[in-house]
Amino acid sequence: MAMLPLLIVMILLSALLSAVFVAAWATMGRPRHALTWSACFALGTVQWILNMISVMFDASPPGAWIIATLCGSGLIALAVIGYRQRSGLSPETGPLAAFVGVEMAAAAVFRVFWPHAGFYLMLVPLSGLVLLPFAIHAIAVRPGLRSMGEKVAMATIGLLILFEIVIFLLALRVGATVPDPAYDIYMATLLTGLPTLYIATGISGLFLLMADQTVVLQGLARRDTLTGLLNRRGFRDAVERLLTSPGAGCVVLGDIDHFKGINDRFGHAAGDLALKQVGRALRLGARDDDVVARIGGEEFALFVPGSSLERVQPFIERLRAAVANVALPGHPGLGVTMSFGIAQCGGSIEGLDAVMSRADEALYRAKTAGRDRVMSAMGERTARRTASELEAARQRAVGGVPGLR
Image (cartoon, rainbow, N blue to C red; front, side, top):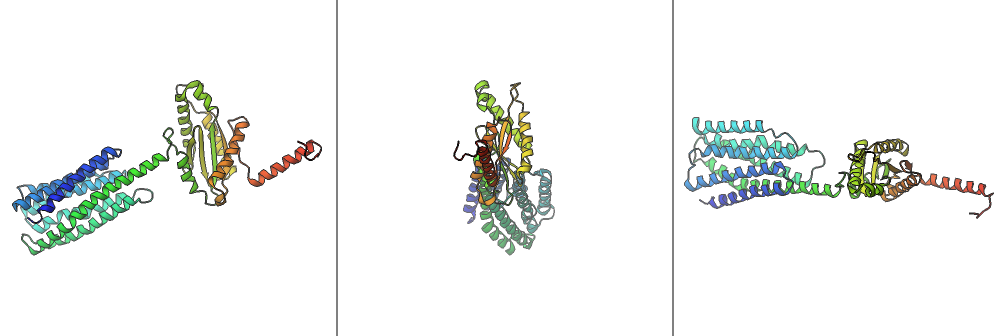
């Protein structure tokens, strides 16, 4: 009876974890794996209840071993399914269900047809040894760097696998019948380590859900809700990391021509539609490694990495032509054009603000030159040379009289 309080605590904590995962599902975008993990801890609750009944009456109810085996192997299978769902992998429900079925058949053999306590006790730890590595694999194959939540989950599952190895080996030492000295060691080890690792696995799953939600919220904070493109903050965060590399690339600013007129004549719904269609055209026309953003109002920005002005200008001309062909459903005859300004990055000696300022100057020249065109910013040497040439031409025009304006 000394273990009865522990079992009661485990029942309550397991039921609480199941309920919390349901709450997480309802409040965090309804991820399927949260419900799967809730079902996992619901099965765990049933198993802890069966353990409590066995302790209270010093015997298992008839057929309880069937439910116990199903709960033990089933909750491990559900945990793996949840991790695979989170990673967008096939849950492989069929093979996992078949594995649990084989475990139940083996339990029937070792409980009824060829009773052997040790072999029966090793079945659930065997489930952990075989299945839990697939949970770690499901986390590891996700693209990108591992988040802290993923690292914690992988470490917790790894510790649980090591514990299952110990329990499996101890179970194999138990004889065909109990009481048995090896059985006492098995139970002492099981009740010492399993509750802690069981709860730790649930907490790490909740931590993983919260970490995933934080990533989603950070992504939303960097996205323009109307077009789905990056916003100004997202564009800055993405591009500033790339500016220090040699031959970083070019920053392009684009502005929809006469956008105020679209809003005034056709309403803001037409203006929003124009923004969406232009954003879509830019996204489809850009390369996979280009950064595309709507940085405010009718202004868009692109970062084209590893390219010079000579290579970027024809590319932006094609984007300009694509925008000019954008159709606005429900507004036949309403066309959209854009003006663009391009500036090449100067490497680590020049910050993003300076590059965007030069691109904005080029955009202004495109606007004043008639709109629906692409202009490139001049480099510092080119700007000085051009200014000198203009001054010389002016001097020639006025007969070389200094100071004449």
